[in-house]
Every structure is written in structure tokens, then in C-alpha cells.
Image 1 (cartoon, helix red, strand yellow):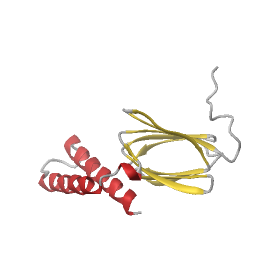
Image 2 (cartoon, rainbow, N blue to C red):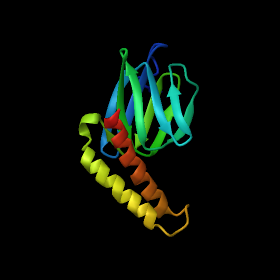
Image 3 (cartoon, rainbow, N blue to C red):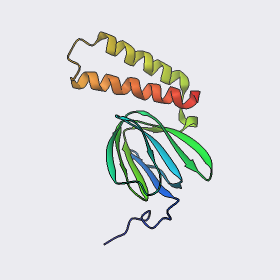
Image 4 (cartoon, one colour):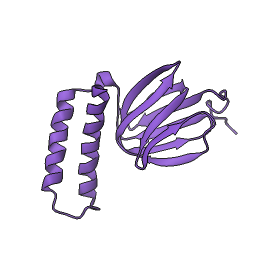
Length: 145
């Protein structure tokens, strides 16, 4: 059976992989990860028990060689275990990728779309508008921090 390249890591490291529809965005070894899940912030350290959780658009933080880095991720899923954290996300952005003016315009459009929404809260259209709003807020938070 093929072994995951991150399974053999030491007890002080985690393999972090982030994939989007555009391909692998990040594949690195880190000391810890903080993920924006739908249930709140989720912290992962080496030796974490296995879990699968839904992602909420937000800022993901990871610590590598004593330095904290941040990226924005969209909705998706995270799988964590003792030696690795894998995310599948709609979107991914590094701080240098964010056009703050575009993010602010996207936020305004999403807010308008939500204000104009007249359907039920569980409707797919409402969920899509909320994800658009959350993604705009994630990008703004990423460059504001």
C-alpha cells in the first residue's frame, strides 16, 4: 500500500496541503495550523486525532520555522490527522494576491444580494450569496491583519 509522504513526519511536524479546482496551491511542512471551520476556529498540532470538518471562508494561519503565515481560503473541507492537514477549498489567496478594492466591491455586491433576497434562508441562492460575502470578508481580513 502506498504511504502518504506526510505520514512519516516527526512528532513536531505536519504536512499541510491546500488544493482548489485550479490545482495544488500549497504543499509544505508546518508546526501548526488554524483553520476556519463552520463550527469555529480549529487548531491542529502534530498528533491530532483524525477529523473531517467543513470549511468556512476565512483566514487560515500556519506556523512554519517559528514564523506565522496567513492565507485566505474559501468554503470546502479539511481532513486532519496526526501527521497531515489537507484542505479542499473553492478559493485560495495569499496576501499579495488580494486586490483590496475588488474585495470591497465584492463585499458590497454580496451585501446587496443578501438584502434583496426574499426566499427562505436554506435556499441555495442564499447560501451562495453568504459564501460570496464570507469570501470577500476573508480577503479583506487577510490584508488588514
